[in-house]
Amino acid sequence: MATEVAAENAAYQELLDNVKRISNVKNAAGILGWDQEVVMPEGGTPARSQQRSALSAIAHELLTDDEMGELLFELESQELDDEQAAVVREIRREYERATRVPGELVEEISRTTSEALPQWKEARAEDDFSIFAPTLEKLVEQKREYAEHIDPDKDPYEVLFAEYEPYLGIETAEETLARLRDELVPLIDSIRESNVELATPFDGTYDTNTQEQLSRDILDTLGYDWNRGRLDTAPHPFSSGTQFDARVTTRFDESDPLGAIMSTIHEFGHATYTQGLPDEEYGTPLGQSRDLTAHESQSRIWENHVGRSRAFWERFLPALKERFPNVEDASVEDIYEAVNRVYEDNLIRVEADELTYHMHIVVRFEIEKALIRGEIEVEDVPELWNDKYEEYLGIRPDTDSEGCLQDIHWSHGSFGYFPTYSLGSVLAAQLYAKAEVDIPELEDQIRNGEFDDFHDWLTTNVHQHGCRYTTDELIKQATGEAFTADYFLNYVDEKYSELYDLE
Image 1: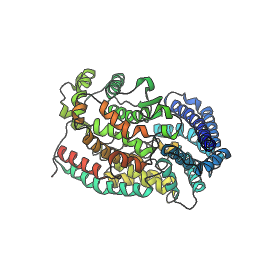
Image 2: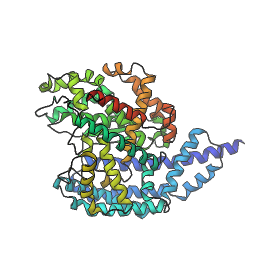
Image 3: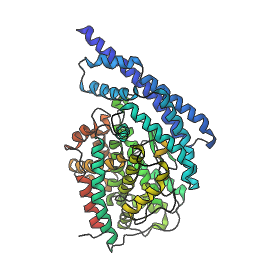
Image 4: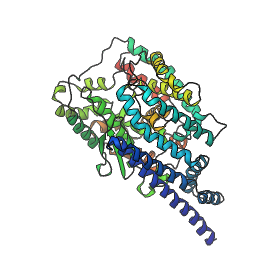
């Protein structure tokens, strides 16, 4: 019996060793990706595309090695505890997907995405979709082929969506986004018909160096671990890394300090999730975040439920006034109204208010589904994009930069990613509602700049589990209920009805 237990432990330990090796290769590739988006000179692309392609190939080869299959097969007949079973479940899922995809295709996709990034940047800067279109067409073809290898009998977009959210299912995404579209559009229309004018306390210019100092003040206040992170700028803000090195980026606009503030808080949410993963499980599924619905819930819970609250601005307004004397006459209510204003003419998702944000998601979701399914051509994208904006938001982009080139995700080949933004926002409201029950004094703590209890609650209920639970199980464990949009829709209805004096 002892020999059998030893053999079981040996097989499991060998599997873990292999997985840690793969994780380290992927994490190294992640640092190269961060470098390319933040500090790499523009001329570095040819070498960087080869470097990232090589690392992708190595990670793919390690994951699809025969030894991995043999270890997974051996462990099928072993009695595993819950944590071991979760690790094997996650590795098996990745292994089964990866073994169906040729390594050459993985390299091709990695090389294309590295080359796509500077082309997207140029197209956006030049306001010319045709610069990016050929590469986008290539990525669409490669991703269709990728999906077909994994499961030729499934809808290719469903296969790609499972890359980012493997457990909630495409049906949940479609039903949730349809419900948001159907219920938010009438609310947005009512707001636009309202006679209420919310405060606009920001006027003039706001020095970007001072905005950076303010962003650092915010990260200090919220509890960012600078020993394991850093703040930089990027054309499209993002967060990346591991529990030992979770970096955030933001961007600054001299006319709009709120944009950088909300972006910084959003990326902090991602980073504090990453920093909250268990150190001792680094490199294993138990030390990795639970896919993108959970990840986006963490960024949106901090951005919307903390950063857009009256309580937060009662705490943080003095720091804002200290940095920018030209808002010294603004009240807490003025700033609260400003951060929650519903814009009639906002074309950019990352600058969108809390309501129209989801219409931006719906537009890209519907277009990328049609692209991957072959229902439209790449050349159709700009016109279709503009038509959908007019239909859902009542505004029409004048330029490609304001329209279909605004987000970086397609240059990464990230088709299927976008629905998780809305799924994450919905989950954030569900989690926050439960946190308010468990921490009755939460609002007062936010008002006092005390975030330890909230950090602890999120770590206990979300962060520390890594991938131990599937997404639906994690939600049930954290909130006691299945995933639901009810909390989000109730929250925005109550909040915006008060702000805009709606009946």
